[in-house]
Image 1 (cartoon, one colour):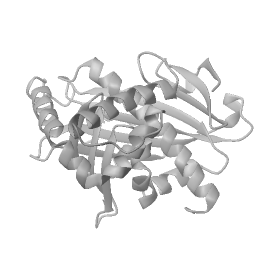
Image 2 (tube, rainbow, N blue to C red):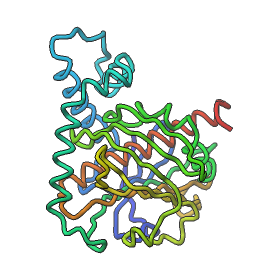
Image 3 (cartoon, rainbow, N blue to C red):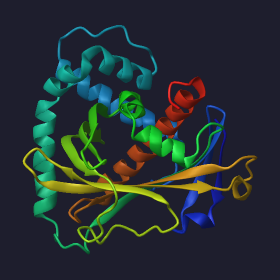
Length: 286
């Protein structure tokens, strides 16, 4: 993997993007406080997920697993299946619920005090435009890619609502905070309800939705934005697109946690866009 740093004025946040070549494709990634290759974030997440699952399985025999921890945790999750994963992780979900209730309780709880975890990725893929990625992301292909999209992904079930928005049930973790939650409505941002959401007028596609615990507590708001990007500004021979992913939390959330979320989202951006490239190139999605 090749890596170098490049200051990108288009990011408009004073960030420095990492230029990585991943599976032969160029990515420009930013977000986490400490710049590391995407694979380093991913292997750390795999250590967390593999350790958690082995602890919950106890003395149960494990299947033969690859030496690579990212491949190993994916194979283990696939062998267990979503129902078994949900059963195994119930104690961790209960613990996460307590953590999130503490965050909400210890927050200012005003609309101008929410804090953000941001991750941005500019991808140059030969078969994927921002419009194609948006369509792919709204398709069943995205849920099919969920387990491999991040080592701390355990289950995701998305349906289209009657209004054309998406509704998801999700089990995933961020640095071990393994949370069972829903996004009841993922659609056009509601800035009257959430005025802290950035306007981002340069991003023509935007979706947002509340992250809600099983008892109805809203503990976060997801906001994803997409736009086309000219390849000329990045030294690329063809145009690409940018994914700008943000999760907003009440200000009781620590920056240590927010940075785990930033790393989580960098992994997702790369793995999901790569899978979209594979699905479109193969004809699985068109």
